[in-house]
Every structure is written in C-alpha cells, then in structure tokens.
Image 1 (cartoon, chains in turn purple, yellow):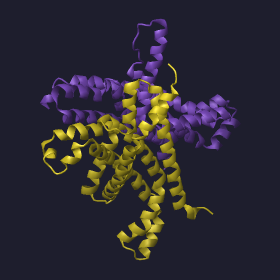
Image 2 (cartoon, rainbow over the protein chains, first blue to last red):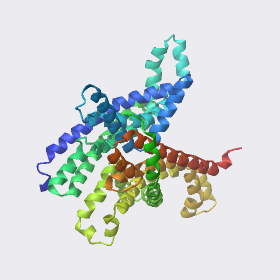
Image 3 (cartoon, chains in turn cyan, brown):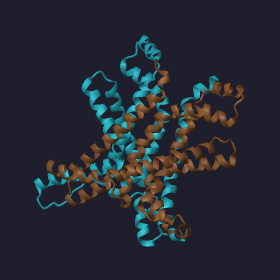
Image 4 (cartoon, each protein chain N blue to C red):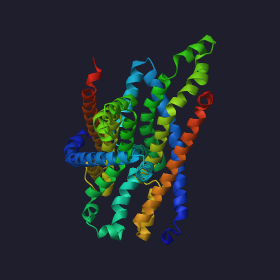
Length: 231
Length: 229
C-alpha cells in the first residue's frame, strides 16, 4: 500500500472523469437509442433503413475502432477546416472526452435501439386502446401509458447497457482521456509497479459496476412494486 | 482532406495479413473459454457453497471490470510477480499472444458461464421429472436431457457473445500484437489517413460479424429443426 501514497488523489480525479463520461454518455445513449427505436418503429421506409444501417455498423465494429476513428477522423477534419483560416495551425482535435463519450454513446446506443424497440412493442395494446377510449392525445398516451410501461420491460437490458458504458470508458484512455487507466499508466511510469496500479483500476471499475447493478436492482423492485403487493 | 482510394487498395491487403492472428485469438479463446465456462457453470449450479461461491466471485469480478484492464493486469501486472516468473506457466505470460489468450478466455468464460446457466435453468422441470420416473441417474439426466435442451436455449445468446469476443480481439493491439487492428494502427501512424484505413477495417470486421452471425443462425436452425413443421 505504501507505493500508492501520493496517487490516491489522482485515482480519485480519474474516477470523477469516469463518472462524468458515464453521465454524459448515458444521456446521449438514451437519445440515440430513442431516435433509433422511433425510426425502426416508424412507417417511413428511409428512416427504417437508416436505423438498420446504424445498428449494423455500430454493433459489428470493435469499440476501440469507433473511438479511434471518431477521434482521429474528427481531428483531421477540424485541422483541415482550421487551416483554411490560419495555415499556421498544425493540429487541432476534439477533446478526447467528447470524442470518446460520443463514440461509446453511439455504440451502446445501437444496442439500446433494439432494447427500446422491443420494449415499446411489448406495451400491452389493451392499455393503448384504453387510453384512446379515454380520449387521450397521442402525446398523452406516450407520456402516461407507453413510457411507464416500457421502461420496466427495458430495465434489465438497459442495466447491462449502463455496465457496458462504464466499462467502455476504460477504452477512452487509449486516445488520452485522463481517467483511471490513464492515471495508472502515469503511476507505473514513476513507480514501476504495474500489478498493484492496474488492480486499483480494476477495483474502481468494480465499484462503479456494483453501484450500477445495485441501483438497477432497486429500480426494478420499484418498477414492480404494484406486482409485488398483489401477490 | 480527401478520400484516397489508392491508399485503401494499398492498405487492405496489409490489414488482411492480420486476419490469421485475429482468427487464432478468436478460436483459441472461444474454445478455452467455453471449456472454462462449463466448469464454472457446473460449480455455480452444484448447490455446494464451497463450489458456487468461488464461481460467483469469479463471475462478478470478470463481468464487473473492463476487458482492457484485465488484459493490462495479465500482460503488465503478472510478470511483476515472483511466483509467476518462476513457475512453469511463465512462457505463457512472457508472450503477448499468450497474455491476450489468457485475458480473453477468462473474460469470455465469465459471460458464457452465465449464458449456459440461463440455458440449464430454462429446461422444463417436467422433462427432468420424467427422467427420474424412468430411473435415470443425476448424471444421465444431465447428459441426455438437460444438455441438449440447454444448448439449444443458450445458443442465441452464445452467438452474441462470440461476436463480442471477435470485437474484443481488437484490444490485443494494445499489447503490441499485430492483429488486423494493430496493423491498421501502424499504417495510420505512418500515413495519418484514419478515415481510409479505419473505415476499411470497420468494413472487414462487419463482414466477419455477418459471416459469424449467418453461420450461427444456420447452426441454430439445424438444432431447432424439429420445431419447424
């Protein structure tokens, strides 16, 4: 434990970065997933094809490749745009935080698309007919009937998606995000103790996974409270 | 910034030289991972706490940490430990290929054991009761009744795991292995043409995923052929 003295604060700030990436990518992932699900469920042929292409591409390519492509690709695009205005600029990049966050949100969003689609299809048609009969508008039906019923169906798979988001954060260290794995590399550079440093990273991620798993379990119990009491 | 097609024609054959290594990583760790997963799953459902607890802890640890961290612990961390350097398994950990195999196997084993457990749990109780009534022993019931049904039930989820294993093999490039991703990253470092190289690599991976998906779908249909009329 002696060798870890002096690195605790770095690991702490690294964990804060992991939490930030998680929150931002979670929001983006939900947005991408909902858009994808809406497109797949719509009657529009083009929207369906686009959403299909989106899920095929991002589910079929390795995560690390998407991250590298988004980061270096956007860097090249930005640099060439900047050079139009100022030829002295040699290199300009999107911050690794945002390149990585968007990349993992896109990847996990493609899985969430299928989850949300399945969950919306799982909503009991009777509930929707009842809402129609009560004179609810489409928007009201969506907010008061469809969403409350679908999130319970989507929750178990959605919990797994949240776990993949937090674990994929480690991959962003490859493009230079200063999260815990990156901190460990720096620490190893000075201390020469890779085993203990990487074990600490593993424990931090295990802590994040545990928190997510426990909160999903709690949410599941909350979502099914009306079923429990009737038993 | 323009899309250079001659570069792609130049780079794709070089990238494809790494496909052998990608396949080796995939097949070796898939087979070893499956063997490990069967063992872990049997421990998990044995009903004896001294077998099921270690299995549960193993699954919890390997599903709760990123595969990249696991690869780094095996590749950078283990050689630091004295008892590993002096043991007979040292040649395995000295070589990045061995390390990648160990990490991928341990990781996929944890996921697959849960998939298999789901399959075993999904077997209809009535069938097992019928087996008991016919006088089959526990072992006979497991081999002749549970296994064939559990395999069919677990196959779709197992296929997804093989595909995610294929994607995980790309991480072997972080520990100096020259698989397809490793070669592509070297080419990008030389040419600085990420669009051309990485997009062609992504297409190669998508084709591989598609082939895997189709062949697993065929196996699934073959095993489920009695269901179709």
